[in-house]
Structures are given as C-alpha cells and as structure tokens.
Length: 412
Image 1: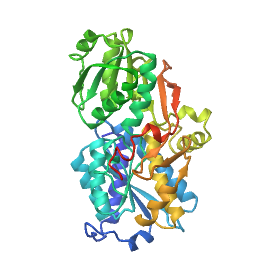
Image 2: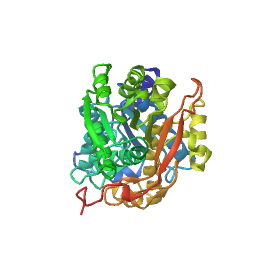
Image 3: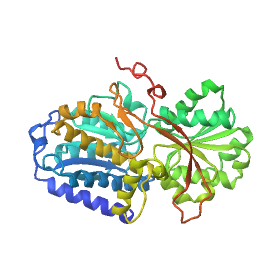
Image 4: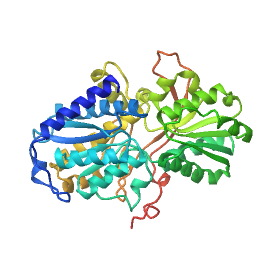
C-alpha cells in the first residue's frame, strides 16, 4: 500500500471508530431525524489498493477540496461536512460490505465513489435499498438503465456510450474504418466497445477483431502480433489504469504506431504521468476533464488553484475532478433544499444547473445522468517534469442527443 493509501485508510479507520457507538439502522429504513443533526457525512468507497490506486487516491484529494469549500462557506445551517473514506479494493463484494458499514454503521447522509462498473452497481444495490443517495463517479452504461437505476441513484461520471461515441466520431472520420479492439474482459471494456460500434455505424466501420484480455494483465506480447497481422487502420485499446499503461508501452515497443493509429476511449492523466511520454505519444482518447483547460474555462482555474493549494502544487486528474463534482453536487443540493433528507435533496439535484469545474452540466431527470462535455485529447511528447501532457483537439458539447434515450434505457 502506498503512503497516500495508508493515510487515507487511516483517516477512514478513525471515522469508523468515531461512529462505532452508533446503533445500526434497520436495513430498509431511512432515519430522517438523523439527517438533520450533527456533521453531514459523505461515504466515499474507492479502490485505494489495486491497479486503480493512483486514480482513487486522486479522487480522495479532489473530494477533500469539495468538503473544504463547503465548510468554509458555512456548511448547511452551521452543519459541517466530513468525508469517510473506505478502500473497496476494486471488488464488488468488498464494496458492498463497505457501503453497508457506511450506511448502517456510520449513518452517512450520502455515498459517492467507485471506480469500476461492477463495483458501482454493488454499491448502488446497497444504497438504493436503504434510500440513501449515491453518486457514481465511474463510467457505466448499466447504472442508468431502469433495471439498476433508482430515484436515489445519480451518475456524475461520463458513461461509455457518451465517451466512446465522442471519441469514435472523431477518430473514424480522421483515421480510417478498419478497426481492431483490444478489450479488458469486464463490463467497462464491453460497454466501451458497444459505444464505439454504435457510433461507427454512421461511418461504415469494419470490426476486424475484438481481442480480450483479463483485468490486471502484465504482458500483451502474445496478442500484439495478431493485431499487426490484421492490418487495421485503428487499434482501440479499451482498458484502464495499469492495463492501459502496459498495453501502450508494449504496442510502442512493437512499432505499432507506425502501422496504425492507436485510440483509447479514456486517456488517464495519472496513467500518462506514470508511463511517460513515449508510450502515450500521439495516442488519441477522451476525457471528462483536463486541467489544462484552465486557460479558457474560469471554473477550471478556480478548481485547479484550490487543488494546488491543498495538495502541494499538484493539479487534479480527470477522475479526481469527477469526485469533486460528485461530492459538491450533493452538498450544494442539500444547501439549496435546506436538508440532507434524500426526498428533499433529489428534486434539488434534478434542478441543479452547475458549472463547478468544466463548464455547464445538469442531471437528466429520467436517469440522473450528468449531461456534460466530452473532450478529445491527444498525448504530446512533453518533458518528464512538464504536467501539461495533453492537447485538447476537439470538444463534444453537452447534448442529450449523444445519450441513449430514456426509452432505450427502459424509463417510461
């Protein structure tokens, strides 16, 4: 475990001790009285350990910024907010257990978090059954669908249909139509491929192969020659975290960038810093946020400056910014409602029109999906000590037409 992970886990352990004396709530009850007194508690389960640890730790940092801003501006009628961090270990069962502890043991008012499609569904199952509000900050198409959605479910993150659609519309026009997918063998990978293929219909793309690999792969060398033999125009690497870093490093070593354009649905800022310029050079992908947009977006500059001040001059990552907004939207909606009770905060969330860090956003009422921009970025060959590692080459502006319709999702 890293030093940061130990620190955050220590914070969460202290929070457990502090709340240990509280009696457990009945599984299917929501205690409105508890929501109107004491600190406002925000449960925050994320995978501090495991392959997505760097991204999760930055999510904690960004969430802390939202908490600090809320408290410094008076909280809610004098009630201050606190963040209760848990390590879900990127495991749905562990995440469900941690979420249950947060809801029933710590009696949190809200839950924000997750960094996996399967994990967020496990957390959502716990929170919606207990009528506690949950804001997911990880990509998923399923969480918006009627079978998994509930009025207590919000989704601040982009979803794969939005992300892959935006990147696909950009890439298929510029780089060609013969496509190979290298796909992480779990929900994130599948949903991204579905998004690319849906967008690709308008361009007549040809899928030459969808080659899948297990989560946590350390060697792609047996798969890359097969991809080279297919001679695609575009290789789309649909994975995340260390998987993405390793795949790009090895594809670069194999000389594949000279033979095809490499595209990813999401390019991670933390991943680019960890892997270096060479592995990512020239790769195109999508993101919900890039700190460099502070040059043109005032809210980004305000957010970045506060993050720098709190965290030793660092700048926030893409998934960190989602955590910031996921926490801040609940707190600002509670302030608008004058209450942390779920039934009061839901309509306040649905009424939010906000620009907290990246430009305008709002939650679509039928599925509580955040309607927001998708930025197309290309990695550049910046020096090792330069944090400005991406160019924003295009922007998909907020548009409900880029989402699946409410009817497609099963909402009436």
